[in-house]
Structures are given as C-alpha cells and as structure tokens.
Image (cartoon, rainbow, N blue to C red; front, side, top):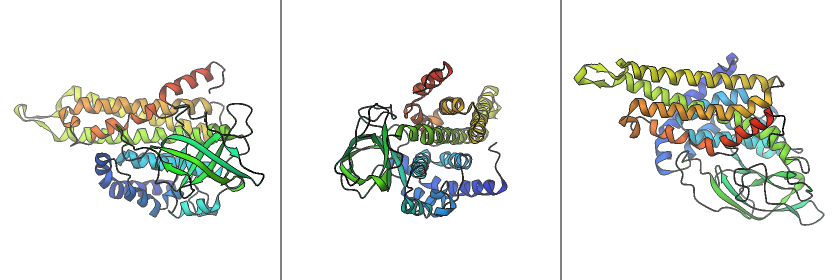
Length: 386
C-alpha cells in the first residue's frame, strides 16, 4: 500500500529481516526491565538506517517520509520502544537538515551509525504544549555565545542520544511563539538526566526528564533555525514527520496484534467441543474487524503521504488527522486482540499485552490525541490550528 519502487521495497524487506532477527529477540527483555534497547539501535546503525533520510552528500540513503514510515512500521511490529527511539532520531535529523548551517559532523556520523539524535521540546512548564517553551536562551556576550537553561520533560533516549534538538524561547522574542531550536550534544557541560523513566508502555525508550543548566553553545554553529523561527521549524518540519511516523508505529503495533491473534485463534482448541477457537464465528468476525481497521488506517496514511509529497491543498488537514486516526485504531485493535484471545492475551505469552500497553503511549504524547482533534477542529473553522 505504500507504493514503493523496487529498490525501496528491497530496503523494506531487509528492514523486516533486521527487525525480526536483531530487534525482536530483545523486545521482551527491554519491556520487562525498562532497558534502553542498545543492541537494537546498534543494529539499525550497522545497517545504515540511522542515515535513512540523510542525503547522500553526507553518506546517507536519501529517502523521504514514505520509506521512513514503511521502515518504522516493520520496527514497531517487533519492538515499539525501538521504533519510538528511531522515530525521534529521524525527527532530530530532520531538524539538523533544516538548519541554516547544517551540522555536517553529526550528519555524517549518523549516516555511519555513530550518532543518535532526538528531540528535547516538551517542558515541565508548558507540559504537552510542546510548541510553547517557557525557557529562554540568554546571550552572554557579543561573540555569539548563548546560554541555555531549561527543564525538559519526556526526552526520548535521554542520556543515550548523542545530539538533542532543543527548543527554547528566543532571547530577542517579542511574542510567545518566537523560539529557537539549538543542537546540544551529550558531551556539553550542564546537560543531565534529571529523572527516571518507568512507564506503562514504550518502556525501553528512556523518555526521561532532562535538565539544561547553563549550557553554553555557539549560536553560529548550533542554531537549527533562523533567528526566532523555532515555531516554524516545529510546525513545518518536525510536526508533519512526527504525525506520519507516529501513525506508522501505530500500524506496526496493530500488525503485531493481528499476527498474535490469528496464531492463537487458529492454533488453540476447545478440546471438549473438538473445535479450534477460529471455528467460532464471533472470533473470526473480530479478527476480520481488526484487519479492516488496519488496512483502512494504512490507506489513510498513504493518502496523507501522497498529499504531502504533492504539496496538495488538503495536506495540512490530513497531517492533523493522521496521528489521531492511526493511534485510535491501535487502541481499538489491541483491545479487540485482548478480547478475542482472553486470558492468554492478558498474560504475556502472546505478546498482545505489551502491544496493548504500547498502543496507549501515543494518545498522551504531545501533541496529544485530544490536541489533534482541537487543532483539526480549529483548522476546519478557518482558525490557526495552534
């Protein structure tokens, strides 16, 4: 359904094999122990997939959002935590590529599998309103040095990523939405993880709070946007890709739930009736509903990709829709999987319980599903979405 070329399809097939052979074996342990999936991230790097969207000039593969979504779906089918880490890396890379002066060293290192990126947008003060940082950069002298201090919340790969695209208020701001995005490196003094990650789902993505305390950077080499244009970077670069990729992750979770449900229904018996569970019409119907919902959601995603690539007039509306659409589908599908497989799904033996929990992360992830509905409603009424 992604309408890929032969070359792109071959890459997805390799990604599927990688996910099955090098990511899936670690997924249960990552979930049980809330451990960062280092082996899985390393496998992505070794395969060149950390450079999936980086132009060939920097050593990357040069693919766009369509291929990124297809790869993410395969990864999420095996380990949603790894998929979330990978998605945030791709968003960080998109921020790098939008910079007036692109950070070549970080881009070439990422393409070679040596640099993991992520976002640090949400703040404790503005909570899920990730587009409105309450922190503000301060200029310390006339040599272009900027001082950053902020309490960031829910930073995926906190303490593990090598580079952080950090949003903050612009020091010259006259309006609340005038902000900046800067590159902060893990080695920069003043950057620290300020809490632990212990969550219901996506337990391995280490989305912990981080503290920036007097982080001194050179604006000329670390600014990832034009002066005061951080909001434009968020809305025009990060948010569309985030919504598309988040939808793909939701679909991967759905596919895992369908696969586990189908296996259980066809392989388990009601021995006293001498019949399989799939011989019950109501269970077959629920499996069919799951399949229909996922195919419909994927068609919606592909339609959105088509609109974005063609710069169609309805692209913004579809981008606002797609995260809510796909993530709500994942909630419904994993719920049906639980109901169809009963006690076996409630235990951990089928892997459905993990997907049931992972599916719920995106609903509260900024921008939340409720915010997506609000933004879409505002756009439909001719108002600014945010």
